[in-house]
Image 1 (cartoon, rainbow, N blue to C red):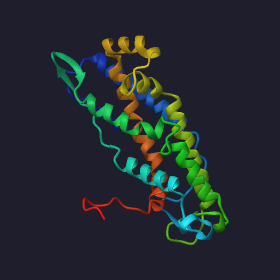
Image 2 (image 1 turned 180 degrees about the horizontal axis):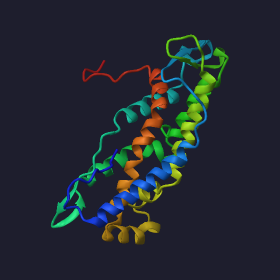
Image 3 (image 1 turned 30 degrees about the vertical axis):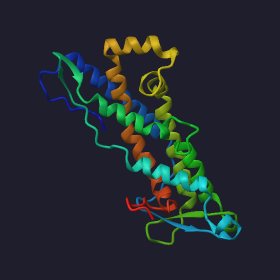
Image 4 (image 1 turned 90 degrees about the vertical axis):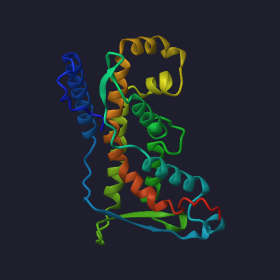
Length: 247
């Protein structure tokens, strides 16, 4: 996502050099994130959901908060862009990112998942909810999720739980090596005073272009590691969006 294969010979060499450096920096961060993985799971995973609802209010398998969390995360994930291309070109006689608004929208859309720790859709909070289901073995205490290899009876729940924990660590590695806090609190959604001086400098120098670009590049990898969370939350997300005709 968001990488640019520069084929336009008009692009100045300093921009080419900076883009190459940015790619190398992102590759280094991704390599560090990949070091978190040790668990092995099959390419195809299926799930079984079970529970004894006798102890639940109104016979519901999930609390209202957990159901809302599942719905919110699924909806957010399904609407994230994964095909953003950065277009550069002349704007008023100077080289700029011509679709910088798309980068801003993408970063704003993903904020609750990767930055807002108090949001139920924050990736670590979603992982905690799923881990509780995967590690529970008494259906009388709530809903249980079991993972299997493809369509077989080979249960891999323990390995899958470990894999999700590693996904969480990998995402954290990427986030901790970047500056999403500065972006969200300095320009995208807030304008905190502590970032004011730097923001003005980055904005006027053009450095902000590369900061936005770099932080969008890694979102493709983060979305890939979020997919298993989406798969599990989808099977917990029993309600579907109602139509325009209200029931």
